[in-house]
Length: 327
Length: 271
Image 1 (cartoon, rainbow over the protein chains, first blue to last red):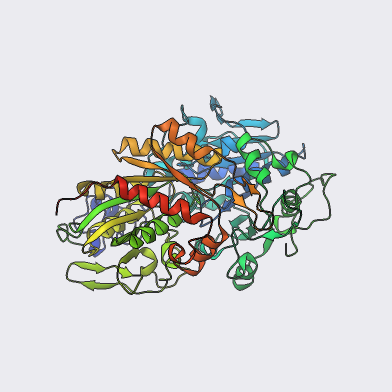
Image 2 (cartoon, rainbow over the protein chains, first blue to last red; image 1 turned 135 degrees about the vertical axis):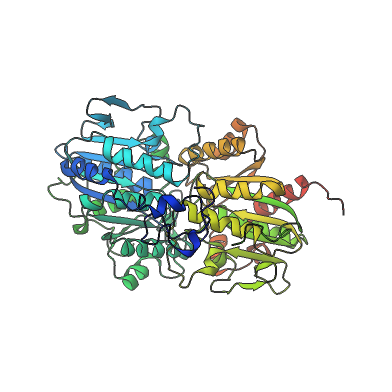
């Protein structure tokens, strides 16, 4: 699909192959034959596969580097602290798969069995899948165009043998493109509970996140709520203990955006240098730093009524949640 | 769009630099704008091409949101962000009807617009064209490298933060550069520590050392570490010229040093 006209209506549009801009396109005959419009059989297969998965949560952001993978990983860790809850973490960031590192699973490989691909297990009740497990070297680049990335995502949803799962958490790359369209399309008939959208406080981040919220509305994906990450920093060496706004909420941060767009604010997570260190070491920050205000914020978000988490036992070291009130 | 694009829309551009990272949110757009501003303050004429179609950050960073793009005989006229017309900018942000409108396109449509951005923008005479990219190694990156190949870019600046999770992605970006024949001018480490304004102690919020180690591992120059600087973040929010207005701020020395290294690495042109 190299020489597609710039106003290509899309292979699955009603105008595919018939529009004025299709003249001369090398794919015109294929599109006009309706091949692009036929529903992908994989969608039914994925619907069947997903019957054993009770809840599906997408973690999105228009903006890169706001903490989607960090949040996905720690949502998974937090939920998996209840041994009776089965958690699946799926990383569909094909070009920048961070989840293996954050979960301490770098270098692990995926095994095939009769029932499909086996996820890599961190704990008995926490399984992970990522393209990172399919690469042989940490320097390998996945230089793929959209259609090939979509094919990988289809395989992840159709061919991974997750078994009985209470929560499938899907970590996504930044943006509103192939990966996002594909995961929504493939899971369309399998019912997605909704999306958690991550942002940081500054407008440069919010302006991309508003687009992501619009994307969710466009594809009819329910929004569970927004998490504001990197929300303030208290220097651990400082006697003064005054907060610094490294990423200043110049337009009111997520709080104002959520009010304007009428979506729930699930919580605010402050910066803590120990988060980055735990992620680099592949350990759960919730366990490494139970006393951190960031841990309290994470826990209160996980237990938020909006996430609809049922039957998750409260960890005994949780203090009164501070994450939901203005930090 | 006609197959034979206007010849020579990039003919007046002396040097093209791509700003890449495998990782999102490390500061590609920040480094792109600050590099452009620093080069401008060194007397250069600079253009910025923002090929992040899903998350176009640059218009806001240069206080140019909502500006209109006009047509001329040679194609689209880039938006000038300053009165002296020494910094020009093209971004999909200018083509959206509403600022919150999402660009929900699959690869082929993104590729087509990027080709247009490269061939149909009337840049005129520029010393440098800085190309800001989205994170990853996919459609946008392949389209941009292919479209720019005939114009022989000077190379790529690769941006990372210090932590291993970032370096892990950026290693793959360096492989992309190698595979596509794009010379790496160097690695920039951003968000390298934060000096608390109250106690003046520095904290490595996003770990430390990753950028320099990555450069060493890949055998490419390490161009410098830019610390976290709330004045810089605020300048970007408000579209101010950080290089001009905050010379005493923590990020200023690193940013100007990186720009100087780019100037030093630029071959002299025959007139």
